[in-house]
Length: 460
Image (cartoon, rainbow, N blue to C red; front, side):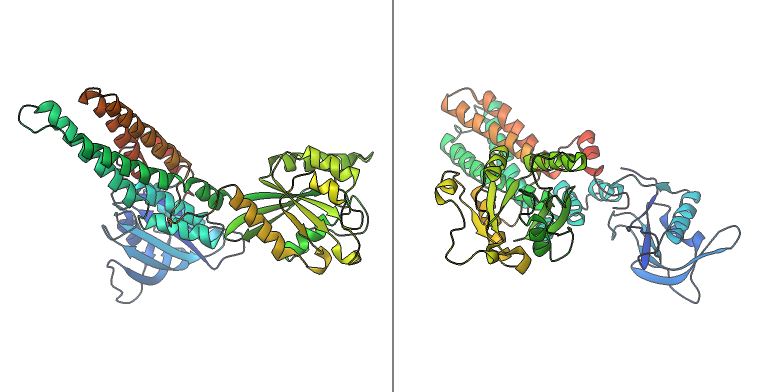
């Protein structure tokens, strides 16, 4: 357990922006530092869970540093279960940085990334899944991602994992008892063990099924809009994002670089990338844009291949289609410029492409955007990324540990089927228990902790 006192700025600091900046201190010297730096006028009471009004002053010169509020949270009723003090200063850069520097001069150490939450874990206030939920909540890009993170913080993932581990420990105890006291106990009920293992494996598989959904909500979906020049890609981006992120003209080749917009579709964060029109060109700058467009298309999770309804399906569209080796939706844009009875495409040509999702839009008129979003969600569902019935979703680390537990439990079933001695049963049971313990932090190495908490911001 760490006993020194740490300090850090706990809010995002932007020059000349933000009304409040917070400096957080945690540790045995937190209150002493606060008494040294903070002057609270009148008869304000210094006790836990009170907010004091006053001024931060230099302890030697008495120079005024900031007018501030002081929040006191004494152990164990604090985020870290240590004494925690927060200076609520004016926002910006100078005030909070000066207050932090004074805290460091009084003996506090600058906190490492995630160290406040690490202390909360080490002091038993949070388990590892809850700590990771804190990081997920800070980085959430949609309401659904935030709800998923809150479920983790509330222990909705830890609860089933602990139950699974408890069942495995119970099985192991029964098996080891027969090994150590074979003559004093009745024979092991193998049928009971098999039933317990089947139930545990079923639950493991149910939780594992949330991994893809969790990754999607955390990382989002990268969608690239590609196509020939002047088919309306930039207009589509602007209509979709309800902004003028991309320049729109009648001249082909206007977009020279990748233009990005962040959206949320059906609760899923979506990074939309408008690319330069793909064509052969002698313009060196445009060549670079076309090359970047091809690279973006290859790295995207989903491609919106956009064509001009007036021109129909062209040889150039066919060439782009052959270059895109990703899941795609065909977007037929500018349908408002085509007469109602006129065919939009060469039907035989499009049928040969085996594209399941086709959307008609008139981006300049803001038409077809809802249909496009529905097609994207349908594409996500087709890739088995739909939400499960569980209101939780595991991350990559948790998925890897749970997969190891699944493999170990399956091996126990094989060992039983092969009628091997009980000693062999215990090997894989212990491996499953170890893997499940890594998820909640009951069994975890320092290197794993460093890897997890290094991704946090310094003040959290």
